[in-house]
Length: 173
Image (tube, rainbow, N blue to C red):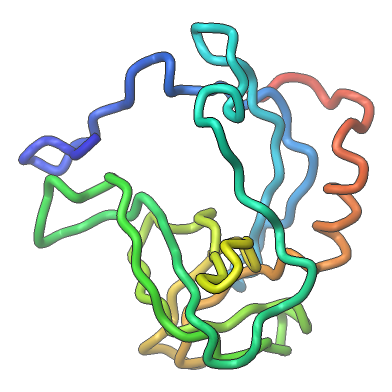
């Protein structure tokens, strides 16, 4: 739902909320290479997200061609239109390539506008509808000249996706 006129968020109804059960793995650092994979619980109607939403994102098996159109759909802050702050927004732009540096070869770079709070959003290849990365940082005007995310093809992400039921690590508190 849209936020209040003050910019404070309105939570969705309980049937559209899903608790986090456990984190399966991830990486968090100051270099915008962060990502996490978690197991969601059931809503108040005892439904999984797939049952409630009726769909899911497919994950890309490879990266798209340079200049392919990517989409970020996130819940970032909006300082000019406060009712859009922390409400779902979507925007597109071109894929510019893979990075190196501190994030290694799985840093995905794109000129898709994002704002603070969009981290964790899927980066979607418009041509296929598949997720190619997890958005992690904005830097269009900074040192690398592009926003960035962690590629789904990252072997660490793939390892967790191939074994989504490791021994329980306990509930998230």
